[in-house]
Structures are given as structure tokens and as C-alpha cells.
Length: 466
Image (cartoon, rainbow, N blue to C red; front, side, top):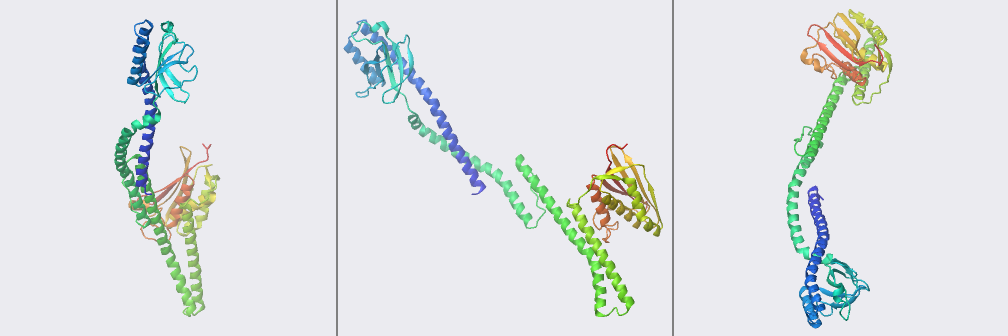
């Protein structure tokens, strides 16, 4: 069953239920209203009849004339006229039609009353009657047959009879309400169904590979929230697909060069082109170097992928940052000296951060390696200081050619160099950024062309340091 059909069925069911509830409530209300009207009518009829009985007592009318008059009143008003004794039994009864007399249980009529009353009594055959009773008292004490109460009664209208009388208007009202509600349901269903249909169509196109699908954020709050969530999902899927394509392109590009070298020299050794020992030794050395380079690149790619997917595990332990930086400078001292670079370290005492010492060493090692490789000669400086707000800042700067302003935003992307050319050495800064982010810190690059580059890392310090 479609959503539209379910909406129509739901609205129709709601209308039917509402009509049933309304009918029940109206029946209850009308039951009491009709009972009150019947009591008022009986009371109005009882007043002149009590006057007639008074006339009989006073000798103004004969009993025969009174009974004839009462029979006429009973037939005309469709009521039962009952004269009751002081103990609540029937003395005489006049039914509206012959054979309609009611059988009241012993003592079931109102008696011992001093003023007019209304109420209900139940007959022997379990029928409920509404009555209006008047006291006669001493007025009837002179008659041969004593009666003290005048009771006018009429059967109470049942719920089924009330519903039967309401069936036609309720049916017409229900039909009109059903038609109107279905028209409203159609309009409302369209406002609900159209956004869902748009989401369905867009999701189908995304599944087919069109990740540019977006939905207008309009309509009710829930629909706008659904559209915004879908758009966000579509953006994330598109970004993930772009990253996947870039990753595949990166892997293909970076592995192509070493694989070509390995295949070429291996083929030379197989077909005998590398005939002398020196050539074979050179080919084997190149194959070994290229294999190691390819393995290192694959490991770095996998490591970066784990970092970006949140699978990297970071230890949380106190790390003395100055000792770590001093160790990193010692590791790169020889490399810097070979390139004619002065490696200088400026730190403040007792700077402690919380994190993974191996990963932090990898972070600053990548920054030092990048600075040394991009500095033809001169100085690479590492400086640390404490900042307000419980942070530690480390700056790694060089006096190389610098980075053009338009390319600063790309330096932390995979395989990107300042020339924009993929060279196979662009993973270090990308890994450094992921490590800094995993430690709750930040990293940024600053540069002016011709004045070198500076990388700034900020990490949260261990609480309690001054």
C-alpha cells in the first residue's frame, strides 16, 4: 500500500471514528435533554389534572366524568395517568391505549411526598418510565378509595431510538465530512508526498552515481530537516567518492614509477641485457631501493588512510616536549649538515603535553624533513613557547624559497608540493596534520615568497603548568 493510499485511509478512518464518538456523545447528551423535556411536559400536564381531581373531591364533577376526562387526556398526550396510594401502590391507572397498562412493583410509585417531584421508576418487565408526581393529601381522603399521589408517566426513549432518529442527519454530516476530509487529505498528502518523492528520486540518482543531487530546503520543519540531512549526506558521499578517486589516483601515480623501474631492470636481468656483474649489481640495487620506496609509500598511504578514518590509536601519557624536540633535531642533524643547513633549537624549560610520544616524534620529524628538503642552504629553526589558555606552540621555520600564497591551502594535501606537481613526497605534511588533530591540536602554514616557510603546531599542555 502506497503512502498516499495510507494517508487517505487514515483520514477516512479518523472521520469515521470521530463521527462514532460524536454520535455517542450526542446520544448521551440528548438522553438527558429528552428526559428533562419529558419531565417538564409531564409536569405541565399534571397541573391541570390535579385541578380536575380537586374538583372531584369538592363535588364539582362526578367520578364518571373525571375518569372520562382523564382517559381523554391520557390518549391525547400519550401518557399514563396513575393514582397511587400512600404506600406507593397503584390504585387506578389510565393508559393512553387499551392494553398498554404498566405493572409497577409493590411500593414502586412515589409516595409520602409533600410537593411535586420528578423522577424515574422501573416496571416489572424492566422498562424505565419518567414521571411527574403531585401530592393529593387530604383532598382525596373523603373518597371511598383512598389515593394520595397523582403520577403521570411516559416511557423513556432508548439510545437505539435516539440513534435511529439521528441516523439520517449523522449520515449526511458524515458523508460531507468524509468528502471534505479526503479533499484536505489529498492536498496535505501532496505536501508530504512531494518532498519524500524528491528525496526518493534524488537517492536513486545518488545510488546510480550522480553525487551532485541536492534537494530544496523548503516546506514544514520536519521536511526541511529531512532535506538538509539528505543534502549533507550527499555532500559527504560526494566528498568520500572524490577522496576515493584521489586516493586511487595517488596510489596509481606513486606506485607506477618504482614498478616501472623494478620491471625494467628485472627484465634486463632475465633476458641477459645486464650481462656483466657491475650491471647486474646496479640493477639489483635499484630494484631493492625502488622496492623499499614503494613499500614505504604504501605504508604511509595506509597509515594516512587509517588516520583519516579515525582508526589511529593515540596513547595519552605525559610527554616532555623539549626532550622530544631535542631528540628530533639530533636525528636530522646529519641530514641538515650534509645540505649545509644550520639546525637551531630554541625552547623554554619544562614544557609537557599529553599524547603519544612516537606520533609526536613523527609529526615534528615530518616538519623537519620538509624544511630541510626545501632549504638549499641557510638555517632551519625549531622554537617552542607556552601560550595563554593552556597551550604549547612549536614553530618550525626555514629560509627557503617559501610558498606562494595561493598554494598555502593545499600544502597539507596528499602528494602536493608548492609547484602543484605530484612528486611522491607529499604525504609527510598530510600525516603531520592528522597527528596534530588527533592530539586535539592545530597546525597551520605561513609563508611569504622568497622569505621561507613556517609551520606552527599548537597542542594542549598538561593542566597545572605555569
